[in-house]
Length: 144
Image 1 (tube, rainbow, N blue to C red):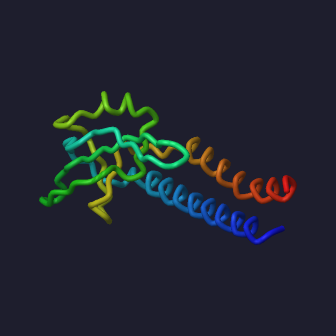
Image 2 (cartoon, rainbow, N blue to C red):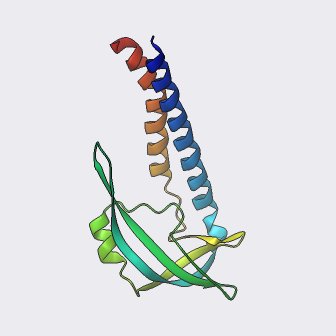
């Protein structure tokens, strides 16, 4: 196995481990969100974002919400928020709309839009990243 293949394996392994760690963190915060405090928030902006790269364009939904917690104003993006459909999210969240937000009392700058921890989504991410971490080096080895 050449030097470039070893570097490719190491990079993919590190990316997979980082993604696995990040998804575990998001899931644990969402799981603990039943202890979060509810308050009203207002949509500041809701827009489509396009990240351009050489290989492809990635379209996502950027949602910014302002809320007051214990007399202090906060503004930011919901923790762990990923829109399944950008088109539906743009229709659902319009600037000026009010909605419930669930604020982490330990970190009031962090909030979620739902108190449900998506166990199935979490499992799907884990399986995908573990599969990448395991099968990429094996495939690279056998395809050389």
